[in-house]
Image (tube, rainbow, N blue to C red; front, side):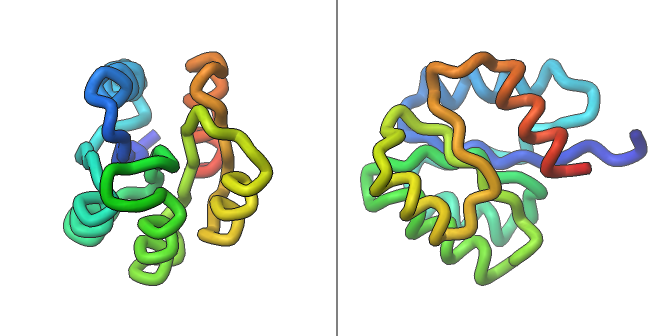
Length: 123
């Protein structure tokens, strides 16, 4: 592959964000371009960094991931949103879908599923 898939991680739990950064950093075809911990920060970084994929937690200190997702998709409709969250209620799934989510992965799923989803969406 010529270009690496640029990934922005959005999660307010530092341990989770760092684990995701490490996991993605191990992949030869992916690069973490930034990490955000709030809705406001995620929108700002997405506009600055132009990620191909945003890994988005749903519950953030200043709002919800779907709010961030709508703004990110308005700015760049080609950006893929993968919601990675513990809350997989139907309300959260509907909100993520309405925000333009390309995928929805529960945090308990295997790391290989997340990596596979990123690869599938960036192909």
